[in-house]
Length: 117
Length: 324
Image (cartoon, rainbow over all chains, first blue to last red; front, side, top):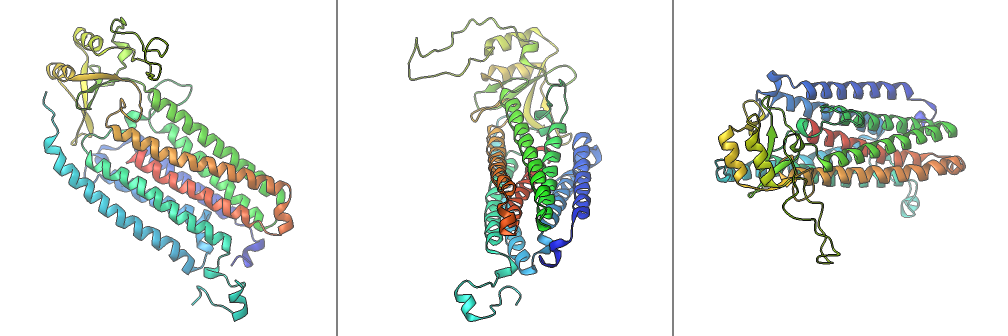
């Protein structure tokens, strides 16, 4: 891949990805400042829709950076899988364990926190 | 099958020119590093998540903490950190343009893009230093209770107010400890501007002021504001005045909030700093023509991968500290 791409410029694609990432960041910032009540105060699958939007947009940004800036797209599929699947699997695993643990701690602790003085 | 197919035995034994996963040794190693570093960062951010879940009902609201932009007074949540994010994304763009120019062996372009990347990195680290300074100095001041809870003060509209705006200091209680007239091996940080007694007295004298606790009302996602009577009951349990943030206490709420902020943004900032150092080394190598002689700009690609990774981590830090 690297040999064929040696003389070909990706400048146009790079700027397109930049604009794409900027728009996503802008959307996040605007949502973060205005926090529309319908998205912020309701709850879906354990957290607010606003939080889900932020999480998904973050993953989209991460994809953009990894695939186009880190040139993951041009690596061999085996290389890509070795890096991406390993990380995603371990991160999901740790997230699941620790967030379950965190909620459990919350459940156990909350009744003992004093709020009447 | 494409992963690693050796062409001849001699080559394989000598290291050969077979490239596992189609990647050169150097790029493979930087990817190894990136995966392990990504897991380190995930460990930190997930630990932060676990503690946030634990203190779900009391965690500080980011929009009320990070509200400053340099040179302008007022309440501007998100804007400064959005600027920092743009700076870092843009420096990622100049980095990838440098890599792209390197593929085409355009030495001058690589050098200029590297320089732009370094400048972007320096702006980012400088901004982060300013963010830390603002966070450490604090803006409102609060009372810490004996059990560690933080009490903030709000006016009749529910907006937070500074201690200075209603408390009068009379500096009666005690003098600052100095090593030349006390214990020479003990040092004391600056005494808070006000004492708890002064704050309580001022609170009693201003009927419009009320106390806001750390507790979040989940229906409105805002902090609970107490009535005058219970405000006084809470204040009676007060222990100390807190201004700004350190690792032991902070005016924003749970101690862990500041601890994780310092630890994770600090660790990330240190990565950016080392990234700048690497970029500067490679930048000079480009200028003196090292890679021109080597006929390959792969080193630029490798520091580029590190730099994009730092950007990638920031995307997550931005989400979990400022947005969610």
